[in-house]
Image (cartoon, rainbow, N blue to C red; front, top):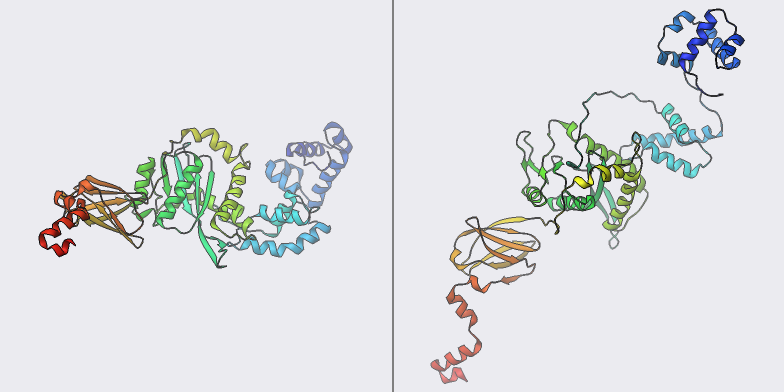
Length: 435
């Protein structure tokens, strides 16, 4: 067939027949090959001064390189248009902040040049003009168990939206998580890398997955790991609490072994190409609007068939991992905070948080003792000597939350006295007081 590259074993048979004295026409009659093709191979041998005996000793890949060294550059209208665009493509691919991939450039190229090159030709000409040498590093391939591990990290670059009221550009952090077995990826934008935002992103990810893996592997960021000792890392207490609530174990990456987090970093790179690059020319006016656009692009990414696999990430996740995840708790996790407070003489502890002071009652027998107060946005629990002694609904305004039984009898009597009681007592002092 015209234009089809012949197998090297067939070319060697052509060379053997020519070495035996066969004519070009005779070769074409004995082998499934056109005479003009035989002429072309014979002329190539003569033009390069090659010895047939030497050619027959060369391995097929090397022989193929010799006979099919490549095609000359095209000079048609499409190439002229491509060369005009090439400097811009080169700048975008060289700029790490643009996060543009070849696929993004091709999509934009086809949108403006519907009669231009197809994908393979576009990639070929781009490669011919962007030759680069890269060092090759050999590593052992990681093997993962389905449903066992969730790897999380923050992207190095930020996304942003425009505040609708002030017009201010608000930069946000981008949380990236992936299930390494299926490479299923989740992305969400949060205001910061602070612990509460980090835990919120993990919670959103678990709810998206519909279950909980056995292991969470974060990078050594401060919202996850306080001390990154490779033998005994000290975890953020809030992350430990979250793991205990959802029943997952936190195993941070070894700071001395960056290949442990290679997969999630690859997911960050893909996020740059498939999210950042496609959103770079769009403007958003709220964090929710930005997240909706991010989720739409990540859904498309997870549903796209993988280049070297006959399935998508989403298909792989639902087929192999979803059923192995542990069930979610019926109530979403709330970040726990801690305070060591002294029980005051009025049988209350004074809790100050977010510039609001509120007092919560404690049984009077603990007056003067040190208490450990554990609280979330919804509730407050007070422990004395490692025992739970009081539990309250959290209040976010100034005031007192008091359980009657927590007070001493003398205090309760005073609190229960009505105004009429004091009016009657006033009679004993003076009739004028009674009036």
